[in-house]
Length: 371
Image (cartoon, rainbow, N blue to C red):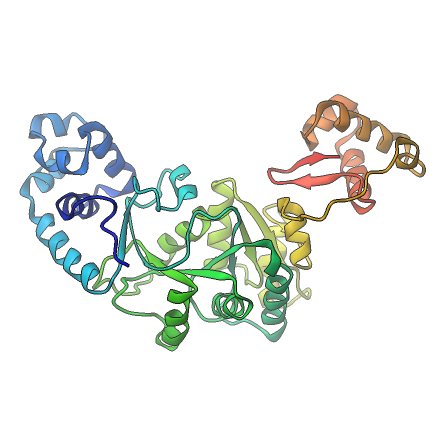
């Protein structure tokens, strides 16, 4: 059902209008709204006051004062009303809350679907358009492992791994959202039109682009920042050294999101990007969905606690010291453990790995460790 951003259509025209002011963008657009008090006030504020706002020069003031963008906004309202599309200004409670922590998160999103985007567990699954049978099989296997974790799966509705992630999610009854690099008046690639239609009923389609926007090359990195920003974790299944999946992973790192990567065969083009992420500590290696759930703290299985005597039976002195330190201080990062135990970083890393294998230490989001 179409919802007018919890506001009247009159407010909506100004919200869309702010996004259309040439050269303003998301960061300065939010500044404008904050300084003026509301989107409507942006267009009714005097030129002198507007020119004093940081990042807003005389040229932008003229564009704001011309009001021409409001005519385009009005036609967009007609489009979204006709096609039951929900506009989500960044102040709307239904706007993806994780994106609010990203400075360059879009001012406005357009959404067609039924899934709630602010679920407790959200993961992006991305990869190459030229997916191999191995990559597709791993993608399907990982999502099967996560079926009971009550997750929302986000991807870009592209060929290859993206399409595989959306399709498998639908098969498993997992809500899935496709983030588009164009307006909602079209589907690209066209072969995914049927898939997109199914997603509207079990997930949704999301974009920051207005109707009439073509799937131009420069739109996809913008799309990728939304994919990275609206999730808790990004999983790269297959990727060459360059491509959209690596861009998404890099943006996710900059947003302090957890990034995971599936290893492949050494020498394969589609493994080079994944191996690069792992080798440079930009992503954690996972082999299955249970690994991802463990890293994210989504594993709901309760482990039976061992007695202190049982706990230290086969541990080295360094491992015992690390266990005692974590137990004393609670959740700690590896550098904090190194500092408090006065052990070398390599010794701590090796000991933590062994303790994880033994199930005595748990790795948490944010590269923290706990017992």
